[in-house]
Amino acid sequence: MAQSFDVPLQSRIVDDKSPICIPFILSQIETYQKQHPNTTRPFIIGLNGVQGVGKTTLVRALAETLQGREGLPTLVVSIDDFYLTHADQLALAATHPDNQLVQYRGEPGTHDIPLLTSFLASLTSPFSPEGIHVPRYDKSLFSGLGDRSPPSTWTHITSPPKIVILEGWLVGFRPLSPAALEAKYSSPTSKTLHRHLPAHLMFINSCLEQYQQIWDQFDAFVHIDAEDLDWVYEWRIQQEQGLRREKGVEGGMTDEQVRKFVDCYFPAYELYIDGIRNGVFGERKKACQLRLIVQKDRAVKEYLVI
Image (cartoon, rainbow, N blue to C red; front, side):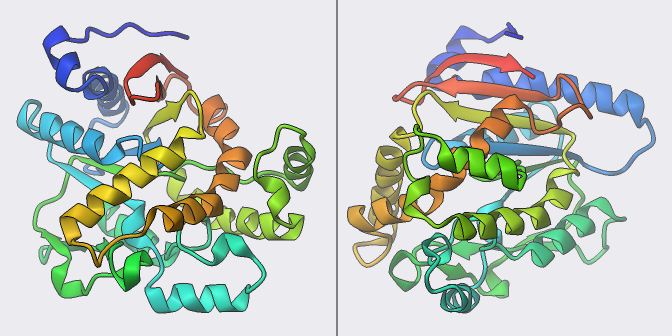
């Protein structure tokens, strides 16, 4: 149902997403603390948003507000930092040379799930006195193909966070049954699925099973949705152009490379976005997911709690 939180007008002018998200998150934390009064486990939030929609900007604003105003130490983690190493991605592509979905990073199967699992376990277990290192991935390496940064560059945290936000474009995607996938594939409204063999789509669908143990740890979920998914191409090009300006002319992908890159993961939007829109928690949890729907300029048009 549609929700109406108190959103300060002056905040909305600068950032129209975090003033909506913060009251939702705080209400979720309050409920969680009442249910688990003695827990030391951090409150874990999953955040999904299509490529280029502004996830990084939002999570930065969320972390600054939760820490600075609410006094809640917050750790933001991007699933992008858990991509396979460049060498492992090349090996995956070579093992499936005909499957265009895994020739580049992005789709289910191109992340190091054991690394992500062990990292989250280190946060949800008693905090190590030696602290924890947060992996990093540099998308500008290998002419934009990317690679994991050396461990010496990973961020070192020395105190346990109260809140962990795991963000990414596929965070929360749930695998489909073979029948449901076939129905999506056979739909006349499909834009990109027919470019791939059903077996190739089934491969990423099966890889997605490994991610479910991660999603099942979420206590709340935020989804930044787009009115039109085709805007992802333009948004992602704008994002990569910014990366090239930051890293220099030798870094990042060209516009054409970006289009091919988006083509690789767009089928996953077609397959799994409805599952996100319907609610990642299913019947297990109600009113624990916030969905924001944005226009082409990325401004929020409407929002609701699922």
